Image 1 (spheres, protein in one colour):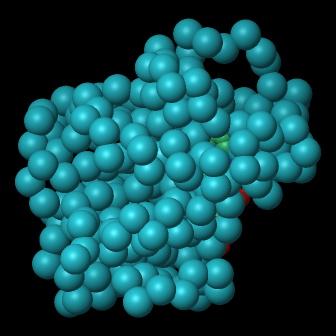
Image 2 (cartoon, helix red, strand yellow):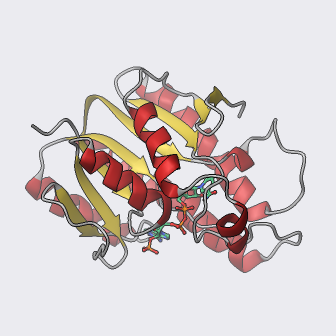
Image 3 (cartoon, helix red, strand yellow):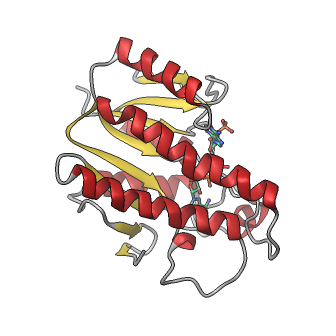
Length: 225
Ligand SMILES: NC(=O)c1ccc[n+]([C@@H]2O[C@H](COP(=O)([O-])OP(=O)(O)OC[C@H]3O[C@@H](n4cnc5c(N)ncnc54)[C@H](OP(=O)(O)O)[C@@H]3O)[C@@H](O)[C@H]2O)c1
């Protein structure tokens, strides 16, 4: 018996891959998008891969049509795809700044606004944000593109939560410091494996979270924006 239908971006590796696998083992149906449309590491009868580049509106519309032809409604969308080319860098590089905003902000907004129509009443939108986007918590001066992109994502989370009121819940979560290919330093210093992070995300999804909130799922506490 399938519990809920979830659409997740970026399940080809890292946190997204571990979350997709955890959801499948927990009885969810998962539609996973990657740019190639091919997701090597997930083989499951309830997994549906789809090609989608979140930065390309034509690609997002095409994926919307394909998903609509197959599924009536979705219960949860998880905006996980994200990049951090300037992570840990002290100086601003305009090319990586643009790339970061293209995926982490414009991509999330395009994707979410397009798929909102498919989310069931009482469904959810989960933003995989970062503690590095918390303005109140910021004491460093590195990673300008990444930090500001996640702050913008937190603001979009709040705006959308206000717009949708209680009909669809919208939350931002920090998945913890996780060993992934997002940066070489994260791979070395990350405190969590993708599987540990996914377990926390899974437990959060099954809990009764409050719309508009921002959570640190490694610490298990609410974060200031
Ligand atoms: N790792 C950490 O410590 C950490 C901490 C806080 C927040 N986060 C956030 O967690 C999320 C996942 O990151 P990760 O650490 O798991 O990184 P990752 O291993 O590098 O995975 C990133 C994922 O994003 C996808 N992606 C990138 N650009 C895309 C695009 N234009 N369209 C569609 N998909 C795209 C990639 O898919 P392709 O196969 O298509 O490249 C990949 O699956 C990100 O939003 C990141 O900011 C991570």
